[in-house]
Length: 232
Image 1 (cartoon, rainbow, N blue to C red):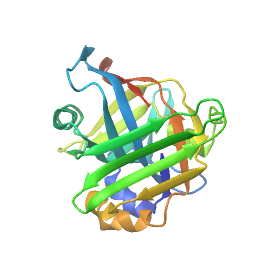
Image 2: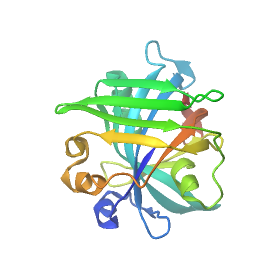
Image 3: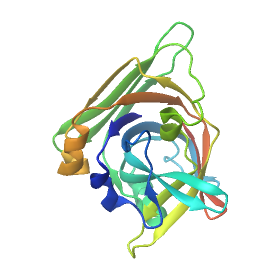
């Protein structure tokens, strides 16, 4: 998870109705997040040849007042997967901004004294983009109220619908343990996927890069688990 400081003025036009931008220490963030879906099922049913695949997304952070208090969530600007059927279903079910590109990944979690190494590449018209990170030592549960918690621990997703309304959906998973990357690399034509204004903001480079140890995840629409998977 490569985390960039972004001007609120760039993100405000993308904020779904009924939510407000979230921030930490007066700074608003957008994150490029790369991960793998493993053992994926739709409505509890595994879809042949579509259970394991990568995703690379650009997201930012919002909150909304719910009956139980603040709901902290994410809004996706762009989501890349290598499976056309996955992109089609996600656009139909959630209205999410999915596109289909060629994607490669190499994931080697740390083991004993061996460092962990993570690399994701996705093919743009201008060439390959990449996000890479390495970690050492033990991971840790983020402290309450920390920037690591803001980035990694969200129970809600929000998406603006074509009629201007907002789709709210719940995402259930245990709190993830995270590492601060001891080395990272991020390259690519950012304007091709994200547009020139956002690309200018991201060109300064990430403020931090985190690696999360994933878990089982369920994505709900209403009270029905639409998607279940394991994120790594």
